[in-house]
Length: 534
Image (cartoon, rainbow, N blue to C red; front, top):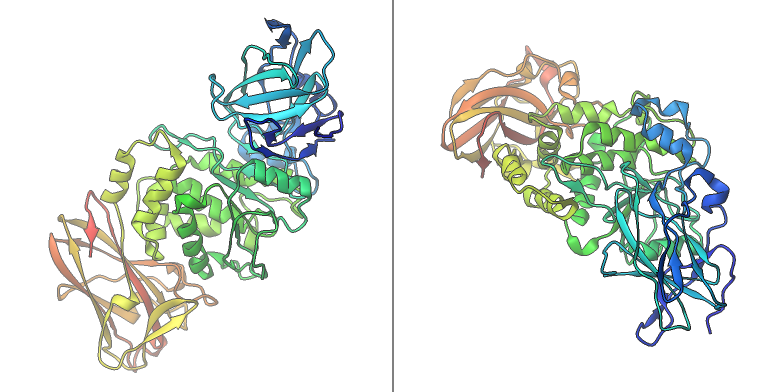
């Protein structure tokens, strides 16, 4: 016989019967009783359904959020400071209490919970009481449940309740703060970002055994660690797969440019359906994790308001200080907002899609992430993204002029245009339709006040184009990072068919400030309904 404490415990996974072959541990929920944390969300006792003397109390519609969280979710998303400031643990949801009646003495009850009325894929819980608290439910979801005395061959009728529609599914993982599911919000095209696929949290270095059991209950298979100082080799949370992509986080506020390789690595993990569900984090699950979330939610078509509210919800966690959308240094969301929105695209989804292609992510990886994570996906969204798709020509695909060589910088290849004039790089590409295109380059000069038009001459099919008369600094090139963010240097018309792009260093004795320039890649983005390919 399984031994348990009858007070405030649930059996998380499994059932001890011959027809089931697994048993899970019981987990205390000391601080998550609906009665103690949030009396107004106690399920009302109303209509009772009888079946063999077992009846269920009617639960109705319930909220997984605390009063404070609910007030924020109903307010303007930027008003987070009225509710939480990142210095106290307020991020946890409340438990939902299910109760029932049975006219006889019994040693233990088995509770089944499912998202399907036929009880398909049920989760099993055990208790000796006539009620149970259940934590970490999804938002905007119908749930069905039954109860039976463990020693009796009888079962209640199927009960039903629905969780609230507010689109942040915050979680309680013992030993981990700032935990939530990024799913549950509407996306471009009318679909929904799936719940139960992608989780963001703080690091799990102090996770408890109860927290690990909840990770197991959620089915989390993969952990991605984004900390720059981490040297871990396996998941502290007990996930089967573990990936470490060191994302730099320093005083220069340059983690967008320096972390392209980390983002590319993480994207590959998210593009593999076998890795799901996935949990990713940095130290406190806010800034680097927030950047990754911005990319993932935006790529899948979430609204900017929902992305920003998700970011600001971190203030309910104990994150060592308040976050706003207009912070300073490494906490300034505008760092990636400005860099990504500098790319053409009619929606944020288009701009993020092209930004990620511009750092070397494959379009098919991005499309797979969308297909995995968007419920009721309108496939025309993928077609539309492809019609506006960028072409990224990295330095390894350049034809180099005499005397030029490739160099590796932060994991990316680039070409140094030496202090000799008229050195050129060439690349061939194919356009399927006539149209107007924006030309971006990953470029860097030792002098950020150098004007791009003084450093380079641009030719398309041997016809010289106008180069932007602006400085490298204004083209998103920062002194500490080099060539990672592409700058728009020209707009030109291209005809259908093969084209040749030439970029020439025009520095000379009269223009010494333009010496020592670097080129890391060329990005060509259609401004109309054009599809570009190699």
